[in-house]
Image (cartoon, rainbow, N blue to C red; front, side, top):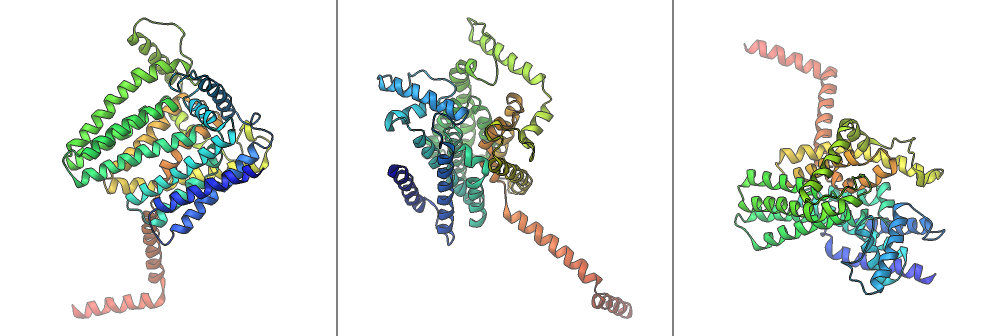
Length: 439
């Protein structure tokens, strides 16, 4: 029992130390860190609640990853290298197996690691927003909303892959943002930017072995950001970056995606084996095209963005749990509000010709489009898959645009009120008479 208290407290202490060193200074810094740590404690409480009947009883995918992680850990214990172990579903099960091999089979440990991943994802969001020249209040609001988003409180606490996937995506875009900032300072090809290009290509591959199609939206967003950067600054290294990501994506598709596609659970591919790689890829692409042609793409995209409806959740894992259902209803209302508020950041990104944020927007759009094609209209599946883009979407909440809009509306209302006052009407009449006399 004491270890169940000591381990979470030790994690919080470690994260608190790292946060104080990594969070930029500001008068609200301490408040931000305390609220961030509180979100970690809430996640730990959720973990205790989820596993109160045992770690081998709760969940769907999280339970499958836990069970597969045990099998991977057994292989590692037999001396098989981690890159040679047999695994199912996703490479994340290998990660779980490595953790079990190092620390013992303990689902709590994996959940605590996911909580740490979520915390550092929030720190990256804060820094990306500050690099975008948002105010500290605006940036910390984005970061804290991410940490307290009801959907993410669950998916980043259970033994699921979302926390790791979100963190790797954020590291990728944080690196791209620094590449763009560095390019603005120096037009020539800098060595540190070459390292960033290689690092981003590796991150795209890593995201892909966690979720098989992630190379596509990431590549689309990054390539667009670099083409826009080249159009804006004529920096040759942006073309080098775009070319490297494009070539890297082709290699990833051929060497990683194509071999793993047969095991992808969302699409059933034909079992027919072909001698030619081109024929094999062609048959799989034809299968994907046939699925897409049988769907109303517009309806599927809308469903992916708005399901499940508040009050009509239809989620098996929380059915009958009034507290969980209430929180999920709140989650959807917050998500609807975030989609409306995204317009502020989209407006400012286009106004300021921000190539990085336009690239992130393209990444979000491509991710939604791909999921609309392959993910069925199942509420809990949509919620889990959509969690990957929630943080990126929050980056488009620009409080400065909202403040300007409110100030404009307020001044407009005051002008109307002043015109309707008797003193204003008489002063306008006097001014009109004076102007006639002067004529």
